[in-house]
Image (cartoon, rainbow, N blue to C red; front, side):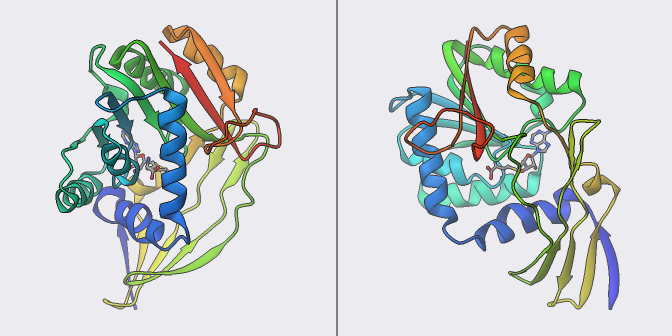
Length: 259
Ligand SMILES: C[S@@+](CC[C@H](N)C(=O)[O-])C[C@H]1O[C@@H](n2cnc3c(N)ncnc32)[C@H](O)[C@@H]1O
C-alpha cells in the first residue's frame, strides 16, 4: 500500500470538517441548538449582520442565514469555502463566503454579532491570538457582541483513539495531549486509510502545524478581551439553551463579549 503525505487545505480540511463531521450522530440537531443559543445570546434579529469566523464548511453559517440573518463567513481553507458555497447555492441562500485569515480581519464597525464556534480560537501565539480579538472588535458595531464557544480548560473531553468509517475509507485519530506547562492542547497526527485508491494518507508539515491550541482560562480571556476594548465579558457553561452558569465542571466555556 502506498503511503502519501497531504496538507490541511488540499486534503485534511474536507476529511475532518465535511466527511468526519457528517459521520457524527445527531450533529445537525446539535448545530441547530448551537445556532439557537448564539442568536438568543447575541440578541440578534432578522436582517442583522453576523460574521462566522473560521466557518469550516459553513454548517452554522447556513443555519444563521435560514434564520434571516445576513451572513459573512470565512475560513483559511479554500476547499471548505468551495463546499460551503456549493451548499448555500443548493439551498438558495445568499451568504458571503470567502477565504480569509482570522489574523487579518479588516471590517470596520459592520456586524451586530461575530462567532468562533467549535473551539476556533487559540491557534497561534499569544500576540497573534490577541490580534484575532482586535480585528473582531473592530468589525463589530458599537453594542455588537462576540461569542467564543470553547472547550472548558478545567473539564476537557476524554480524548480517545478512534477508528471511524467515513466516505472513502477509515480515519484513525489519536487523542490530544495536554501540555500543562505551555497551556497547550497538542493535537496528534491522524491517519486516513483510503480504501478507494488503496493508499495510506498522513499529514504533511503544513497540516501538522495546525494541530496545537492554546487553552486560555476565563481570567486570561477576560484580560485579552478587555485589553482590546470589549467592555462587558460574560461566561456560560454550555453552548445550548437554557443558558447555564460557567463552572469547573461545565461542558464548554462560552465567552460573550460586548463592544
Ligand atoms: C475546529 S474547526 C471549526 C469549524 C467551524 N466553525 C465549525 O464549528 O464546524 C476550525 C477551523 O478553523 C480554520 N482555520 C484555521 N486557521 C485559520 C485562520 N488563520 N483563519 C481562518 N480560519 C482558520 C480551519 O480551517 C477549520 O475549518
